[in-house]
Length: 165
Image 1 (cartoon, rainbow, N blue to C red):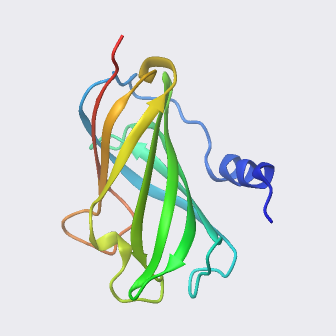
Image 2: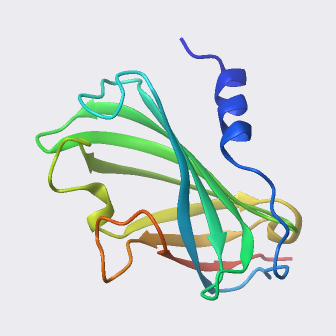
């Protein structure tokens, strides 16, 4: 069994803190993310088994490329499906002024499939946050760039949230 400290270490190794171009507010926004690293814990990218994990580290940036922060995700395979795997994922969007926490349960194709997971937008539930995003609620929608469904760069991230006082 993989210990929580191993997962935390993998997250820290995968993403480095970057200076923010601006401090985002707790409001609706559209940003972009580009892959920095994917770590497989278990049976690598193909033939994943229940309990296998995938750690993803993304750089968040503005349309002009200005750094905003990072998005770190841990997925866990729950079961096999006809077309891939049922997974659960938790993630944190890290900005200089706080974090937005989000989670999802969805089906993803096996990495060996031609119907790659990056072909569809995914809706995450915001489950809270820290700093400027304390008590955040709403959704985070991640999706591939329109011009290249297989690209791991410049994914669109639409954040619709509010933070009640």
